[in-house]
Length: 251
Image (cartoon, rainbow, N blue to C red; front, side, top):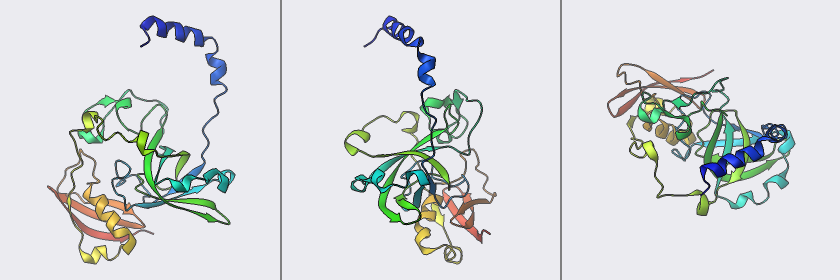
């Protein structure tokens, strides 16, 4: 293990050409955008993979619509998506944030969380790769499940998920370990559920069961709304029970 003096010598050695090397680092390029049923942030699952019935497609920019770039990807069940928090860009960053997992009132170090308010607003998600389809005008399109991204989120890179090295089921989860996601009972009357496209119903019920409300909002009388798949699903929450009270089609 390197000692403190070893580290200092190493830093001094590389300090001389630090600026020249930094100037050679290319800026990130948007290679694609993901298209989901979430036009806003509210209601999006807090982690990828929580709702595996959520469907999305990844459409690539013209420069990257080359099928050769995807050769071999069809052999993987899951992929990593490196993306940008396009709705959470700030000029300054904070070393402390308030994770929703802890009720939004406890501060933790930003590097101990997945908060969008980071020095570099980058996100990382693991999603299921359902299939790859090639279209004459749009090139290869990736159909994925379980994404936790807002519609039109920029994608910077895609990498295959390798279970033998990327999965550590026995690893500690820090402060998140003692706070599992508790599911709500969802009452979605047929008069409202029938308005939702059939292939989206299981997904929206799953989203509602995760309690989309911010952790600090527990008003029993407040009506909340999740915009999903062209509809505004309005609901109330009493204790562990969520009731849908109205569904409005968005224009």
